[in-house]
Image (cartoon, rainbow, N blue to C red):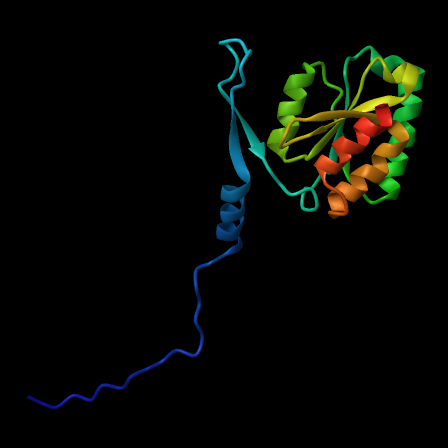
Length: 177
């Protein structure tokens, strides 16, 4: 038998198979959850609802603008208020989406929860008289009523981490009292 010489070779480059798809999957694994069915829902209702819990700063859309009913969208006061609101949040650099579909408000809230939109701004019939809108937070599903002109600044503060939802709910109670 001949004597064999073995040379050890250490590569200069290490190529781990850790692409962006694995990072993205890991992020989704941590922020997606199923919200259980609440009491009082009918038995035919979907048992669970998906929620994509992006942090407000990381969410692609910061809020969804939702009219409560299709009839509101035909009112000139709604159109004027909506245009002013859109200009204000755009000026603050906040992205938003609108959903004026004919679905119920609960279904539209659920859709936006699945998309990871942290806040929903609902224009209802009372808005036409008092200029107050309902702001809903995705994770707690709590709602507060605020004057429309104070909402853009609140959204900016919530999305930048300068304010939190609990403080906003306390402030809204103070405003109404």
